Image (cartoon, rainbow, N blue to C red; front, top):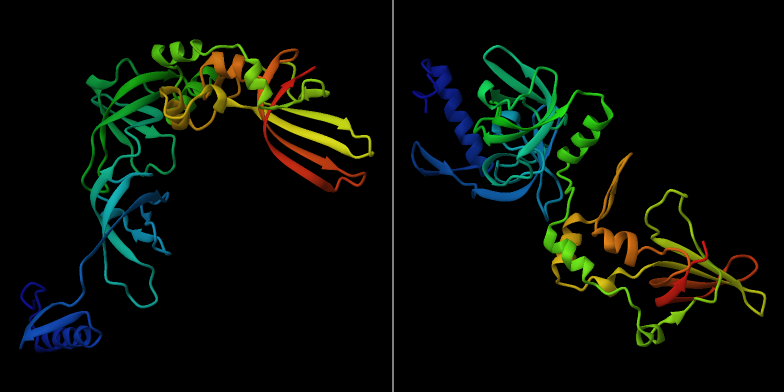
Length: 341
């Protein structure tokens, strides 16, 4: 060790011996015979999710571990925000947060990034929009696909770095336009968050095959609110109506309020391709000028839209309130409604 550390003087070698003895006393080292030591700490690995900082360091969120594990930029091994990584945990120092280093990228969160192209004579870079991407992405001139300096573009990474300071290498997938233009920014949001713009033909066909007819047998299973004043609460230009309120005064002077949402589960059966697609999307996404729906149009704008003057299947919460708005009764279940507006 003295040779490796280039320790020459007797005082330096004495300091090394003292340091080794201290590590032995605290339990970090074990002396197997005079002058020979081995680590007494069991090597620990963990798997977790990367949460990057703007400086290029990161915290790894490990399930079941109370404190996140700090990773220095030089120890990231090219891991990016949201990646699932395997890390080596360092020996915990007294009073310090847990630290470690990335040893393996288990799963990449993203492979494509939006940003601004900086094009030079022989090479180009994409400066990512996300502040949590710590390095620019190198783009060879041959892979610009028509992108020019200052364009906003979507770039796919082809080669990932193995050292934290190096840039990934990528190619332009799509030139989005000039920064600041409305359509460019909308397309950038869609690309950055990998939002699915279309449904496959098979899913569209599956949605169109669902019958609009509501059988009398189905209505008889439900609490019928079609005679109760019911209305949706949406702007005039809304394309789909997701929820509705019903209200009526009861003979005893109390008020019955129904809160109704479209019963999507009647139409989208568990385990179908439509169900899996909706689970993957999680929600509809509302941008300034467009909606990216969770379900195909026949469901979102027709069968599951609580349009006026149509019988609609719903799931509801019904409460009875006294004159001071105290809840006296509550009920949850399947219903059928007919909105008047």
